Length: 329
Image 1 (tube, rainbow, N blue to C red):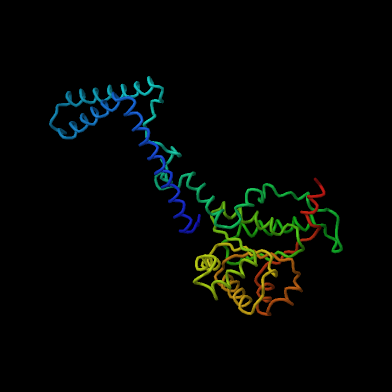
Image 2: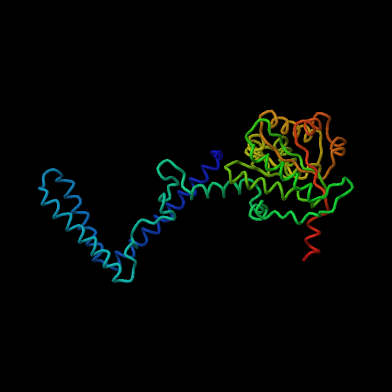
């Protein structure tokens, strides 16, 4: 697993919040019982006194005396439990409270991450990706190939068969994500043919595998780049943190390339971002409604050459599935 230190920090903060909350609940319970059952507090003080006596006289008392004290302590503990039950409380009402009894809310069992910590890490990674609102639905478990037509188009290949081919490539992308030879993905095709949906499916799988993922629409990306350059002190976003993630995150998803407001600076900054990630073997998924020929017309020769040479270009075909879904209801 390779979750970032930022995600681990947030996970540990969540665990600390759980511990603090449960400690507060326990203190309120103690106060409640001490006021309602004074005899319980008397017995507790007696046990504390006896334990202190044992520690103080360790090695002095005879084994018989120690056993006698242990017996008295056990009887007092039993009486405490009986008092709780007698007054309508569970006998473990004043035991330490944990949401996870496996790791006691520490996140670890010995040196191994507990499943509860893994769950928190995945949730935070999902939130950090900007895709949390879609990841529950947009995943491979919900991916339905039957949504795609099996009628061949002008190329002789049906959208369904084309999608099967794309899925094979995306599986290879996921399975070989850390390999330097695995190319980033460029999804092309008209609106509503599954580009963003499939990006979400890939993101969900990689997040579950412990990767850090960030989604940005190209419009938002261009805004962040402009803010960072021209309005850093009064920026609407935490641009410094976002820029760091844009360059360093395991997987960057850029959606709707071509919709951004194009300035000479934005186009240069976009090239620098994409080129830097390619040099550092940081994977990307870029989706666009533009065709390959349109990309050549819109973007510089050097950026277009990166698309052609460094990305696996996958063309999505078929009708708008969102419209199809509306009429199918």
